[in-house]
Amino acid sequence: MWRLLCCLMLSAGSALAVDGAPADIENQIKASYLYKFATYVDWPAGDAEQSGAPLTIGVIGADSLGEELKKLSLKYAVRNRPVQVRMLKPGGPLDGLQILFVGQHADARAQALIDSVAGQPVLTVTESAGMLAAGSVINLVRVDERIRFEVSLSHAKSGGLKISSRLLDVAYKIEGKAP
Image (cartoon, rainbow, N blue to C red; front, side, top):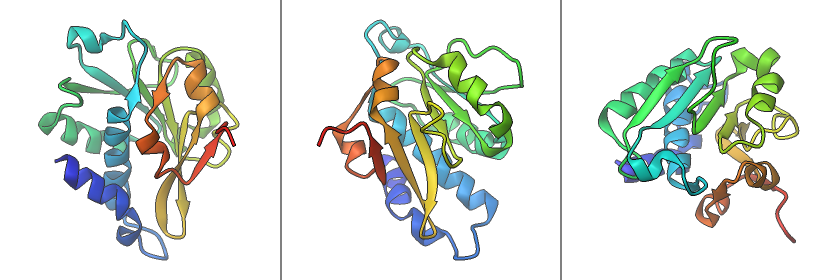
């Protein structure tokens, strides 16, 4: 499975047509990215990982992507932890999340959502231009018909998250990287 996800990530560009990808293919690629990100992030000691509790991914503003994540969660664990996907509603609770995905349909609320988990060990992942500046840790971007990602190390650090150098090696852009 992980080899398949790696292949999807590395070949994400080949699945996208010049005039745009079918929504289902793009959502599958983005869901695969999210799943894979979880394997390359270390949460602070005391996280639910030690207890075997599920890794919880909250999704807002991207219902189709959330459905793709649910399909993956039925088949695959992350670091021997089951994965739980929560479809979030505006104004709903964000507690208990390890990953928060803010889709384009929630752009108007993105800043407030990111601010509400700032400083907490929550990996925030977005998919709109300028979201690293808004506080997101990882932002998915389209570059030359490919889905790529940019990372903010300072936002990760403020939440106590450590991102593997293996993930950083394939990032399109890294903010806060030492020269």
